[in-house]
Amino acid sequence: MEIQNRWLWRHAMGIALAVSVGLSLAGCESAGYRRQVQRPTQSSEEKNIVIEESSSQEEEILEGISQMTPEGPEYERLKDLPVPETEAAPEYYRVGVEHETVAKLQERLMELGFMDNDEPTEYYGAVTQAAVKSFQRQNNLAQDGIVGPSTWQAIMDPGAKYYAVGNGDQGDDIQRIQSRLYELGYLATEDLVTGNFGDKTQEAVLKLQEVNNIEQDGRVGRQTMNLLYSEEIKPNMLVYGDRSEVVQAAQVRLKTLGYLTTEPDGAYGLDTSIALKQFQSRNDLVVDGYLGPSTRAVLNSPDATPNGMSLGDQGDSVQRVQELLSKYGYLSSANVTGYYGEVTETAVKNFQKNNSLSSDGSVGMQTMAKLTGSDVRRSTGGTAAGGSGSSGGKAGSSSSGGSSGAKGGAGTLISIASSKIGCPYVYGAKGPNSFDCSGFVYWCLNQAGVKQSYITSSGWRSVGKYTKITSFNNLQAGDIIVVSGHVGIVAGGGTVIDASSSNGRVVHRSLGSWWRNSFICGWRIFG
Image (cartoon, rainbow, N blue to C red):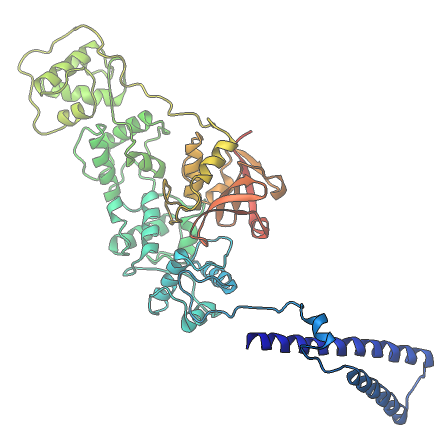
């Protein structure tokens, strides 16, 4: 049947081609004839003559076309003409479907804010499925992630509403929003990142809207969503005098790390300010006493440097420790000076011995925890002075934590990026085994020895730290390319490596027209 259909198609094409050529020739001849005559007007009789001439010519052409059969000469000449084969669009789109119309679907989902901006593909993967589920949830459709006729019609409807969520909604997208609220300091603790939009999340959204002077409705719609990932976002910068659950969560962590000498109460007072500044100093942060996103990120990191004081240190934190030592009878009040000298070191050693701790004369996490705890053993004798000197050097010193420059180069960065090709795309993930676009760039740069803090794709527009590339044609291997709502690593040879939402994974692909048309800028990290 298929062979017969193809033969019939070719037969029809042959006839159409012959008729077209013949009529073109006839038309040229007739036109030439008319130009030669150049009659100003034609009577109805003359018009009829022209029509009859044209009709007779067409009939002669058609009569000259012999009937084409598989055995005839026309068949042999035309049998190798290509037969167009366009696959019909599927009735239902689900994970695994590949069709050119999937790109149209992804593009529409991006327009409506349900999917991160990226170069559309023809593959319907897990990320597309998640975006469809969010759309279905918002439009009261069955949340199966399958695009049938009703879902397709709703998505393509010119009146389709932009992405919006509020109290009572739940899903992976809610979890991503909560993660961002936590990063910005609006959610107090990471355990509130649950995927369920409840009262705490609503309060956090309202606070964000208040701080950023936008409509306070407690919902995340177009304006709030765009703001969440823009460079204009104002984080919840907690300062002296503030009181909240966010402050209390930070105090608990500061106490665990040995910085806070009082009990957490949620009030940002003098003790919290001193502890925070000491923490910032020991963790190579700007010492400003502000509890902002960058400080919170390091504070809650497992790599946070705990407090440590030893011979030669000085400052408010030292004075707080001396006050506690004096309170429990280990140090004379006259020696509460803010300077960690030999007398303070001896007092610390005595405290450690009396409280069953390693006696090294330095105040670390264990010593601070005991000193600020409720079961402290008071001194049973006088405060010892002098001693054998420093024990183990200056534990309070801190290394710079690496240079902001690069240990490797463009080749190293591309090699690291290539090693992650195929890893899944997960919104908000920063590695090592799953990424979103900005998390992928962040992880790769730091692995390559470039000390770069995490910033969103929007933030990469104005990072300012590196050499800015303003022409798409000037990009080279190792550059960071920034396009509208997306970021990747230029791999050379007209290619890019990026964490792609439309592909659902880290990919190595061509820097095609989509990238050129969406190009904002590039950043040269090396050289």
